[in-house]
Length: 161
Image (cartoon, helix red, strand yellow):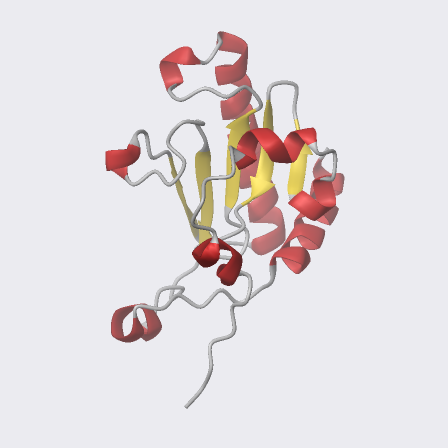
């Protein structure tokens, strides 16, 4: 029998109490590397998803705690889309994906784990990144740790900006 080692998931699984909005808290802590914040714009930022579907799974969020698109200012909305374009450019350069899943889960019924702070998921995809593990074992294998992903993307970002 082989073991699938993913110790970072324990924090998520065992955290049964709501401890505030991490998309509000993390940027305020001014510990970007520890919190995996890749980029800070004027009104939006990019953070690695701590529980990714694939290596390089990013979240783009406004700093302001807002729960739907209609509440974004025009400046926030424009920058959100510009940061999305930057994210795709960065991931393309560094991880060389063959495609992307990009989207928002708006509202709890849409599958949003955090439904009161708007954010966009950017997930790089490769042919074959969904394999028998997901089908037969209901298990997704993520092949790179968050710290390594962060370092690679941060280095790539420096070459873009």
